[in-house]
Image (tube, rainbow, N blue to C red; front, side, top):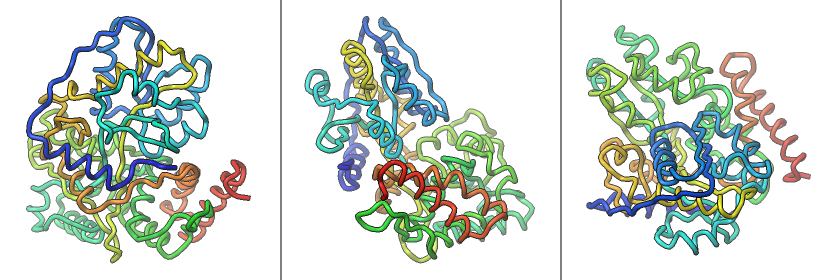
Length: 415
């Protein structure tokens, strides 16, 4: 699978971030066809979807932006006609759509309507354009400057330093649960393991095969660090997705967390929290774990697709509206800080520094192999047993490998 390369994405981010002027957008007024978008619900995607629907105001429009988007997009694009004409995806979620054959190659639509789309935004799979990327994302440190200063602490650069800082903050009576994390059982928990395991230097599969290889010293190290962190988290951490973790931050209950760059704008604005919280919210680079020197995070792109089971008119409406919504026309004072945009005209903001630091650190892209999603699901279904003290790390990893192996064998990736 020939997905966007690390160097290509890094070049696109650096080029976009170094732009000093906002390029002008063009008008858009579509009055026929249909566009229906499914995607995640954070501000950057909300802005993209809103502009796309505004562009197609004369057509039939709808959107469903929800944290549950990955459980809806395949089913919603399988019918004929598909319920959704586009799914907004990332490195991981596009794989399921390709495997299920519910999105169409965009080469003809790009040729007809997308001459202005920079090549850096076109995501190719096996030589065909399958998505248009519009932003880069990564998880990185978010911290409360005032709390660290009160405790006499430097900004952590590793998870080991986060643990030491959390203990000092608790011991000083500043916060009981100073660490936050999107550890909700399922996709979020699996993503946190993926970050941590990459940070240990571990490999997910035997080279050139679909045989999983996480039940090893690096896998145990990753799990043990995750469990150590949970001792400083709200006891309900297994129910906390990114939204709940962000709410904990805005409530002033958290001082350190690993969070998506795309969500930090909400944490740093003057809405939803007291001044002492948002004025002291700062971002850092990706954290490390152990001595591998590898950032414990993953580099992502987000982009949009076009459903396969829709009419040519609906495909054209969807493509044109989303191409407009992910062009320089999107960029303004409100949206500029919402993401590290890949469009021409993006000017880096302080809130983007964590993602840019992740790029500069050489962070690893989320693994783009067709069976990674099966491993992600197996991780999300099984890791809670270890964190709750019901199993050893080795047994939990053995359970993950067994669940993955069964699924990969059923789908033909393993014999």
